Amino acid sequence: MEGAHVGFGWLHASRQCYAPAMSHPTSIWLEISHHAAFRVGGWAWVRADGVSVTGRAGGDRRTDPERTALAGLIAAVGQAPGLGPVQLHTTSELVAAIPARIKAAQAGENPPTGNLDLWAQATTALAASPVVIVPSLRTLGAPTAFAAAWAELARDKAKDKGPFTYPIPKANLAKAGVGASAKP
Image 1: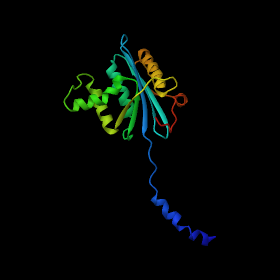
Image 2: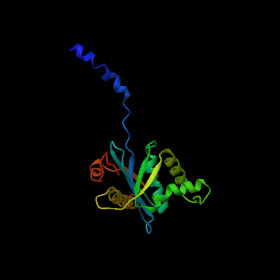
Image 3: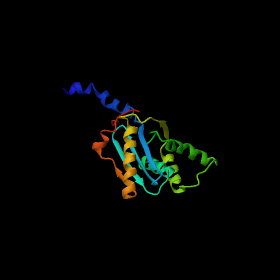
Image 4: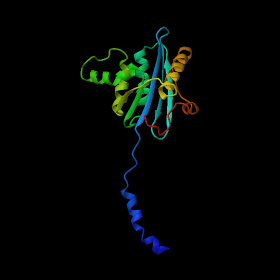
């Protein structure tokens, strides 16, 4: 048998020639919910990176829609720097406008005047991971609808309990409509 093994010496050497496995782009579904009368807001995101599905929800009192959108984006992208290319799916026009508004502000056009602490954090988070905004619809059973429902729940919880951030339980994430290796 040793003679047969010698004939396959090329097999061991060829393992070094293989290219590393291609990484999956990270997909994030982010939604926000704001109640103007009570000045409370909530956000939720679901992230699939080809290996796992994770998610968080959070909210705050005495907030405005812009602050809620910024807090959600920072939580979704800023919590894991170096994600690589990120596809950010959202139905929120506020969230979708953040990268373009940062780019315009950096060029000296229409800089933000409020929530400067969160604008600075959002700028840092987006610089660490390039983001492509994917406008989405809230389709029943889709990850955007799942995130929207959690954002509403977070808004209501923030109204009752104040500021918070919690992970979405794995059992619930299994119902998000996205698998670990899902492609958008």
